[in-house]
Length: 199
Image (cartoon, rainbow, N blue to C red; front, top):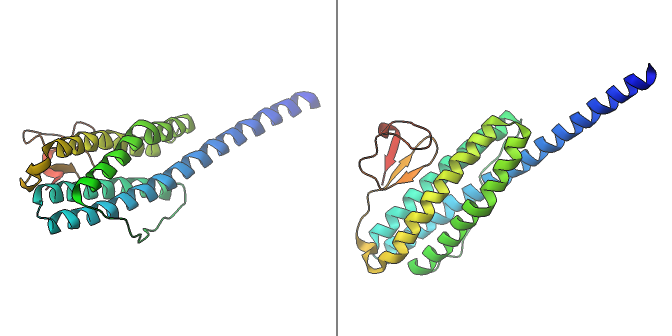
């Protein structure tokens, strides 16, 4: 009888440790994602200022829209962390700001990395952990980062058209970014167009 209770205790202990390890991985991922998104927001604000300085209102507006989207992601990650009892604060980091062409290249590289490697890995951890709030936050960021890649690729191809102002919508709930003026609801979180910021 004692051996049976011992095996049950061991099984429960191992299950608890596995859950704790999963929770720990999700927490670390959320912290890393929060820091990455707040840094991206600040970086894009700096890139927008440089584009304005160089006379490229179209590129500046795109960077402002991306900064807004990254802020939404950071807020969602922060809320998921708060549910785990963790409070994050934004850091004030300075960034290497080059010309708009180089800034677009750097931004595209970062967005591709996040959409191909970073967020898919984070999402696997959160889903395995059963953390629905973290999963939703990561899914929203992943969907948005993919739209960021498309926007940045378009801007890179546009070159001299950076002076042309773009109309960009950003969902205030999940950060989804779109140039579709006919958009009625967010394709990711289904919030109505009225809940989008316009750039």
